[in-house]
Image (tube, rainbow, N blue to C red; front, top):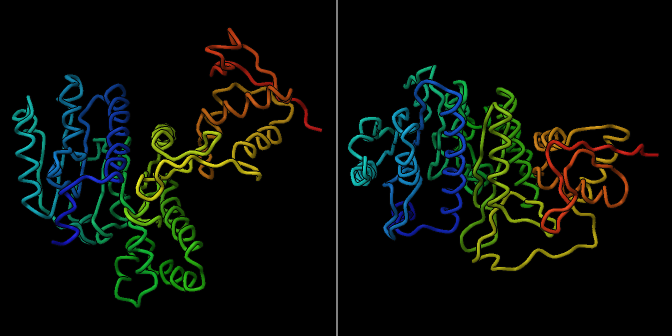
Amino acid sequence: MSPKLDFFDEQSEQSKVKAKLVTDYFNAWSRVMRNHWRGPIGYIDLFCGPGRYKDGNKSVPMILLEKIAEDSTLSPRMLFVFNDANPENTANLKSEVEKLPYGTEMLKRIEFTNRIIDKAYPSSINIHPNIPILSFVDPWGYKGLTMELIELLIRNKGSECIFFFNYNRINMAMSSNTYFDEHLEGIFGKEHTAVLKQEMLLLSAGHREQVLLNALISTLKNRSGYYVLPFKFYCQKIARTSHFIIFVTKHSAGYKIMKEIMYSNSAKDVDGVANFSFKDSYNFGSQPEQLSIFSRPLDELCIALETNNSGKRIPVKQLCDCVMLDTTNNFVSQNVKDALRRLEKKGKVKIIGRKKKYQNGKVTMPDDATVFFANKE
């Protein structure tokens, strides 16, 4: 049996976390859309699978549909497209939907298709311009994943995309002859692909990953100035990078929400700073993060905050948002507030406007307080 066919036999740790990233974000995104958008709201899954693994675990479509069925305000407004090239998968998913309490009614708002997602796919479909859409693109490999497709899926106001980036396969294709170039060019563009292939020939395995990931992020941003967040997964039986889940949006609010979700599902260092990756039990066990004699990210954040804001007075929330929206770091609000606690302890800042300094034994850092930075000599 091929790996592709037995993928849905048993859900892996990696697949559980991937599903959680998608479903947690959908729940947050759909609430925002429900409260700020009057018309219909869309969700597209281009590689939907059968809805349930053979071990009984639900995959993304069923988790979403069960959650939506509980929301009487959101449910009537949702429209879905579930696509899978394998008709058996969409038939199984439809059967699973029919078993839901309101499954028959929900089926009226679901379109099942069996299209092959290839280079021609984006030009063959029309998405209503007035419907915000969250899309999930989770191909087995990377055929059909193109910048044209991503741009189409996030073109509408409020639309965002989460997609699977198969680093392992794409990295190998970069070392091949021109056989895979058509698919690589769909992602990076023809000229950039040629340059990347030459550049990566000279790099060690450790450097190839960052160069390839940076190239992807740069391509996405250069097309329309998107916010991009990558989340890393390792191979199931070897501590080597397998793939990334990539989140793409044009909206700062969505970026902040997903950054918090990825943070909560990520491995973290001893200071609580995430590296935006999932460390599975097979490769990493339950080993704790080790202390280091070298400077750690939170130390560096303290230095940056003190240096960049010398003599300034800034609300806590404004400072947190500024750091979070910096796409070059992995910091979230909790990290910024931890850094401020350290700086306050050292007398580098004063916090004004909090009702009480301690709660449950911890120094408070409310959003509406104000940070006074000392003048740095």
